[in-house]
Length: 314
Image (tube, rainbow, N blue to C red; front, side, top):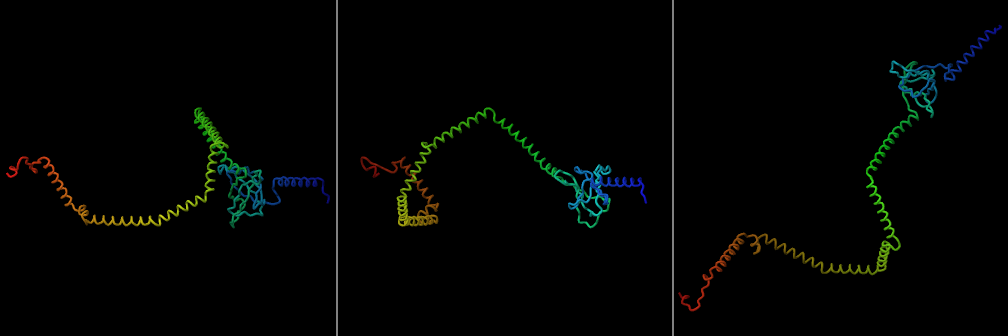
């Protein structure tokens, strides 16, 4: 059977169109020879995810993003259509997480499988997640650091202004004089620490004293030993007897005071008996009146006759 030229041309054109379509889809990451199931995921922010972005499961590519568009009915949330090869099953409660696939920040989706035994059906809505990339993590770290740096700069600027206010011309002059005095003090210290300075001579004197003590160490030790022997002998002989006598004297005095407190003896009666006190007081009063009367009326008690004793007889 002879095939006409027109039929051959049509077959060639059809094959070329098919190959072109397959090649275009292959370049886009689609394999029309492997059918896929479509799933839907909703995101507030996809972080730069594009159509034809790769979809991974356990690090293996299982599909690609077929479409992304705004959903007006869901408050302009981004609807992402996931094309996943039919040979891969998606358990329920699995998460479609947007992440950075490389250091350049290329976005992709990975399916985080759940432990559920129930499987999603084509067209189901998947749970979503978003993992910030390296650039986002760096930005999250740099922004707080930037804020702290700005606050620190403001604090330092305020501190410098306060210092400028505090250190006026008078304060600067006083500070300069203090520094000059400090320099003068250090100069004096340098002079004292020289070979002929006071500090050096004092150190030499101390060294001389310590060397003398070291040279006379035996004599000093002997003197201390003799002093210790003398104190021991005094302690062993007189001091002990003196302390014993003092203790006996204190005991006797204690006994006497106890007797006085009990009213024993004359002193005890004198201290504890009120009547004796009042009698003595009355007696001293009578004696005082007698002496006073004797001074005022001496003739009453003394009669002196100069020329005879007639009056005495009378």
